[in-house]
Amino acid sequence: MGLGPHRARLNIQSGIEDGDMYDGAWCAKYEDQYQWLQVDALRPTLFTGVILQGRNSIWSWDWVETYKVQLSNDSETWKTCMNGTEEAVFVGSRNEPETPYLALFPQPAVARWIRINPQTWYWNGTICLRAEVLGCPLPDPDNVWQHLSDKLSGSKDNLDFRHHNYKEVRKLMKAVNEECPRITRIYTIGKSYTGLKMYVMEISDNPGKHELGEPEFRYVAGMHGNEVVGRELVLNLMQYICREFRRGNPRIVRLVTTTRIHLLPSMNPDGYETAFEKGSELAGWALGRYSYEWVDMNHNFPDLNNIMWDAKENDTEMVKTANHYIPIPEYYTKEDAFVTPETRAVISWMQDIPFVLSANLHGGELVVTYPFDCTRDWAPQENTPTADDSFFRWLATVYASTNLVMANPDRRICHSEDFQQHNNVINGGAWHTVPGSMNDFSYMHTNCFEVTVELSCDKFPHASELPTEWENNKESLLVYMEQVHRGIKGVVRDKMTKKGIADAIVKVEDLDHDIRSAADGDYWRLLNPGEYKVTVWAEGYFPSMRRCSVGTEARPTVCDFILIKTPRQSMNEILAKGGRLPQDLQLKLRALRLRKLRVSTKAINQRREHSRKARGTRFARAPRPLTPLA
Image 1 (cartoon, rainbow, N blue to C red):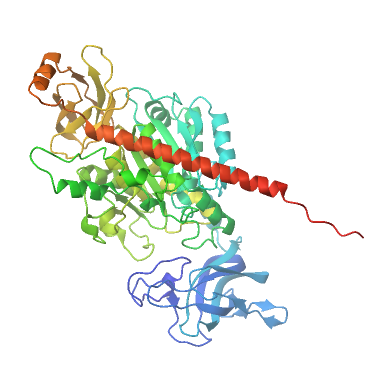
Image 2: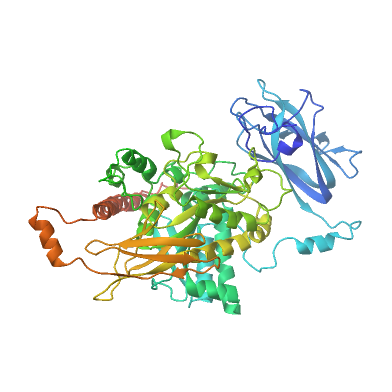
C-alpha cells in the first residue's frame, strides 16, 4: 500500500520506514520496462510535459533515469509520445533523488490518461518515482456539469492571484497604499543579507501611531523562502482588507478601527528569490528554505527555554526565576554571533511594537502548532506545554477549525502524519523539537502569543491554485486576528499624575506567565473565559489586586489599575536598615542586551554595506576588454 500511486506526488516526504503506507514514492512491484504509473486527468487535457523526482527515503536511493510516456483517450488504446519517427525517451533523475527534472514533450498532445513508463533506473536501486504532470484542461463536450464546476472553483474575490517576486511585492504594496492611504502605511524593519528590504504593511485607522488600548497584531510569512502560500495570502489579505473597508464591510471596518495590524509578507526575501527563479514545480522541497547564509531562521532565535528551565532548577523560596521578558543571552549580542540580519531585524521589530498576538505562516503540512516548540532535556518529541496551554490550544483550534481543508474529514494526509487525529492542532514539541523558534522567543521575551500555521501540503503550489488557497484560508485569517480582543485589557496609571506606567508586571493567579504594560501604561492579557485574580506591580509602587471576569464574547474585559508610589519614608527606613530597594533587574538586563544587539547589528550592516559598495566600485572601474581591429 505504501508504495502505491497515492505516494507519487512531487515532493512528498516519507515516514521513518521504507515500504510502509507512508513511503516516499510510488515504487513498481517488478524491475522491468513494462511497469507504469497512470494518471487520469478526468477530462481532455493538453499534456505538455512531466517533472520527475526519485524516492524520498533516509534508507534507500532509488530513482528513474529514463522513461517513455504513453497517452490514451479511453484507457485501453495507448500511443507512445513520439520524437519525429522514433519513440521519445525522456531523461529523469540524475545522480540523486531529490532534485525535480523537467521534460517537455516534442509536441503537446491531447488525451485524458497519461502513463509514465520507466526504461532505466539507478543501478543500485529500484523503480521508484514522484511526479507532476503538466497540462491544460480542455472543454469537454460530453460533460454538462463542467461549466458550473469551473465557475465554482477558485475565488470570487478579485485579487492579484499570482506569485510575486521582490519587485512585484513592492509594486503591489504601493498599489494598496495608494488605494487606501487613510488606513495603510508601508515601512521596513531591516534588510536581508543581500540588501533586500523587509517591507511591512500596517493597516489601522490611525497608521503610524500606537493608540492607547488598541492591541497590535502581526502576520509573518516567508520565514522559509520556498514556503510561499503564506506570502501570497498576506498580500491577498492586505488587498482584501483595503477593498472591503472601502465598501463598508462592517466586520472589516470593526477590525481596522479596533486593531493595529502589521503584515510582513517575506521574512526571508533572499530565499524566496532563489526558489522563485526555479519556479513552483522545480524548486523542490528545500531550495530557498534557508537564508543566504544557509541558516534555518526558525532555529536562529535565542533559546530562552533552556535558560529558563535551567534557572528554575535553582529556584528557592526567596529567589524565583522570571517567567517572562527573559533577556537575550550575552553571546547572542556579539558581532560574531551566527545570527542572520533578518532575525536581528525581527527581534528589533518585536521590541519596538507591543505586539499581543501573531501567527507565523509556513507550508508543507496542514496543521497548526503552538508553544512550546522546544522540548525539555532535548527529547526529540515530547508534549511541552506553556502556562497558557489552554489558550494556545484555543488559538490553534480557531484557525484549524475554520480552514476549509483542515476541517475536511475526508482529506488525505500530506506526507506521513495524520494530524486529523489531533483535530489538526498539536503542541510544537509533541511534533518535533525546535530550539530557537520564533514562537517560543516571542512568548518568553515579549508579551506576544504566537502559533505556527502550516498552510498546505505543497510548499510552492502552481499559481492557478492560489485562488483556492485564499478561499481555504480567508475566514481563518480573519477570525484568528479577531482573537486579539479576547481576555482582559486596561491601563496601569500613577494615582497622583494619572500618567501611564510602563513595564508594570501583570500577574494572573495560577498562571505562571506574566506580561508587562506598554510604554503608555496599557496592557493586554489573552485569557479564556473565566474569573481571574489579577495583581499588578511596578518598581517604586505598591502592588494592586482586583478580580476580572472574562466572558465568552470576542471582546476584552477592561481592567484598569491605579498604583500608589511607595512613600519616601518607607524607602528611607529600608535604606537605614542597610537594605536595598527592590529593582527590576530582569528588565534592566533585557534592555541592556537589546542595546548591545542593536549596536552589533548596526556595525555588521555598515560593514556589509561598505563591502557591497566596494564590489560595485570595482566592477564599475574594471577595464573593458579591447575590441580587435577589423
